[in-house]
Image 1: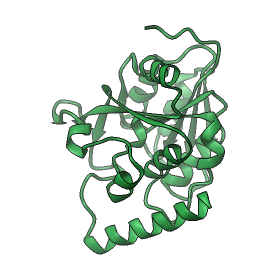
Image 2 (image 1 turned 45 degrees about the vertical axis):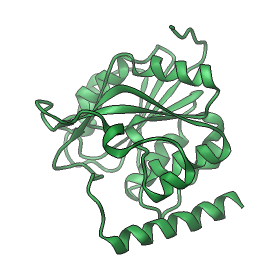
Image 3 (image 1 turned 90 degrees about the vertical axis):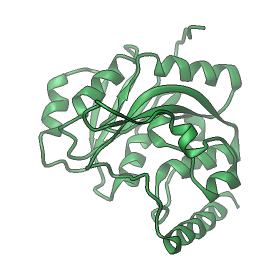
Image 4 (image 1 turned 120 degrees about the horizontal axis):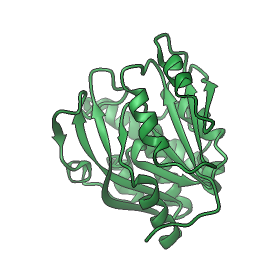
Length: 238
């Protein structure tokens, strides 16, 4: 099935000192986009060559914003807030999109009427020479479910897209929760339908400079994070 669309989509990228990988990532994203689509990059004050590299790509679909300099959650929020497309795709600065990522995800949106799609990923090392985890879904036992994802987050931001209509429910992202992807996924489940697909549509790059990590926090911090999340969730939906 090939999607024939008359609407634009947006990609929200948060960048910060990403000179090592960002050009490869941007070019892999642009290869997925149509002429009317947009890539919104919120840069949180990079001090390396990140902005120089972005500007040299010189593509009219790219729009660079000055980030709020309040950390990765608020940087993603800033990018998403400025997106105008029917669907908003989240993107890290250091992964690689496969060429059919957007089309595959739009097929799911159109077929199911859901408001959030999350796809699988192959986890690679920094220079892309080794596969660390063949299937992120299998590793994390990924799938929908509000209680399931509060207990243990299975959402991965760089593999997610959501509909523009749900943005007003998602934003603002609470300051004191751990990360944005869990919040977005669970809010989408509360107000609609979230679908997980097993297609591996990016190479998820893990290296020394990743903002997030795949290790467990100490027990006390894990419990605290869950309590904070639940309280913020209740405040938002009541």
